Length: 446
Image (cartoon, rainbow, N blue to C red; front, side, top):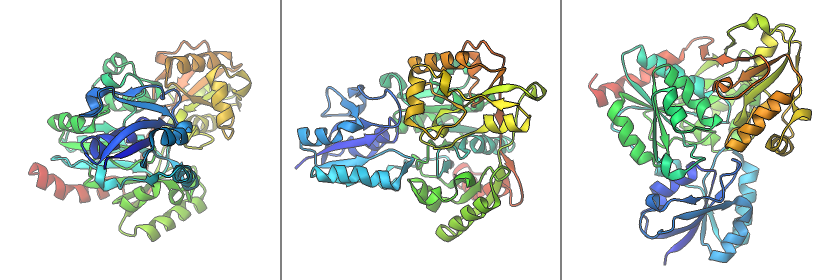
């Protein structure tokens, strides 16, 4: 008997789980994906050309709020929970809704969905959104480049547009990013990497992506999204922790899994966090995964013309996902405003336009900062309109993407840059190379 399945997702892990677990499995037939977290990704179809046999019209993507109706209508047997950075309590609420309708509820084990590479793989994952994966990934690439190794980064999926056009994407320049009409969220991840000469792959089918990345890479660097587990089996896994949210490593799915899988645990942001938070995170790591080697790191911020910030009333624009489902109240922009002595961070709430108003209502914890929401042209337009409506002296973009390059901003602005910095021994470079060297020898003959 064929089991009818719904995959609950957010346009990333759900598609990957389908591709590697359900697509060619005669036991299952997927009747729908549901969509959460990302605005406007429902109402599409997962395309027939990616579905394999049995799906001539593709698979519909419906809002998560319709899950119970979908189960009843299609007499669904099984629901697979397939997205990340979700509090445990919320996962069980979803499970209860599903089981109340008579369907089974599962979470697929990480190892079942990890594809194996013939090249060395370093995975950079985290226990929450906004811990500092991006700068850690860049640091890993710098370490490899300094040893004449060619890293190729494969980024966790963000296929928020036309799925058939996003099956395999390769980014080697800013022009490539423009060509693919990337969202703000994609630009934030791709631009800093390609600017340092690193080729980035992303898309939808991570089997095809891996085959292409292996043609160019000495080392594959998996750059995770949210707190999701790696799509590729890592030879070395780095998991990043945020002491500003100490304890969250035990409370969010599947971040705790990443803690348990870590070979290297990076406790980031120690220069701005309370000592108690750092020590709580350290204790949790040592108790849950004593084999993980721990290093402490900072994310120093800088701007090109710091002196111009002093005594200015600034609007801070921060990374969107870090503020929204990452539940942070601030990011690099606020830290830069404080460091360079801005007079005030102007509250954008009274000036919010269109969909930005909806974001503030949905995430009431967001303080006097503006989340850089740009999943669609409409959101980008609302973001631009909100920025231009705010009464301020300067805009501080605390996002990795150079938003000023394609937004028309009336007010003077600066971009905040931030990086990775070891704060004490052992250093990330030393630990990584100690663990990676045997793999380089085995797979590359070094």
